[in-house]
Length: 329
Image 1 (cartoon, rainbow, N blue to C red):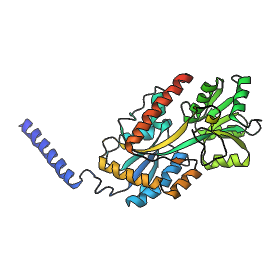
Image 2: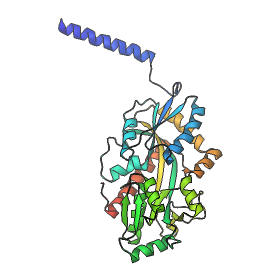
Image 3: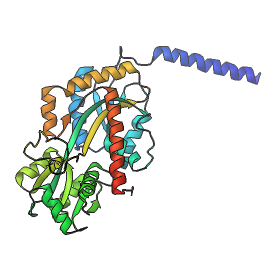
Image 4: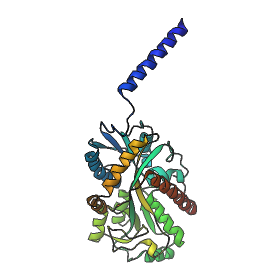
């Protein structure tokens, strides 16, 4: 009798589940979305990822007819927000604005995050790439990256630079420069790029790599810091008069990037709908102009192109980290 009761209970649960499934069917591209969509951002309010997400989110709200809500989940180098997104329902209502720092850097440093960047997410599109700018204190008599390298060679281990932490893009940029030129630098890690920039302004550091956000470019234009070079392969539209590091040291390239992701197993028709809308948004001239003012360059494409890009980035990061002998803190 006990077994029969358990069986009947199981049947009742199955029946209730079937009824629930009929009332709340799995979302598809046809009826998606019918409620607000959440964009998880793995950094605090005011940073490059937050600014990008709010620009795109406002346009996505118009395109989808549902509010795109920004949910800032900072901490653990982006792993807290990324884990939350990876474990969310694959229904298209929770998305991740992921970055190289939050998805690629930890595995490259042999840190095992609580998610796999390739199997726990469905790529939607690469959104932007962000070149960095090499900044020096205005009291240093330096006008080129070559002069900085010559100074570092004359003072091995005495030239200090700051970054937002081990493995962050600015740190890897300095380590790549060190590896390519044979100089020895002193790294000072901070909890974020803002404190490093403050110490550069105070003269406590000789240089930093930083994203080309408006507040940083204002400091360059005012002469409080000097921008020697940018880290992308080509010159940035945000600062066309500033040369690239690669113009002096061919092959140098180190960028930040942001992409849009959904949890793995999100229906492909939803991925396709999101991709079509976000790619269209990023290709609008007005959006390109807004992003350029943030030091970002639109780079939309297919989900497959983003996955390929991630694999190339993973290989590049591993080479830099291995060459520089970096280890996680």
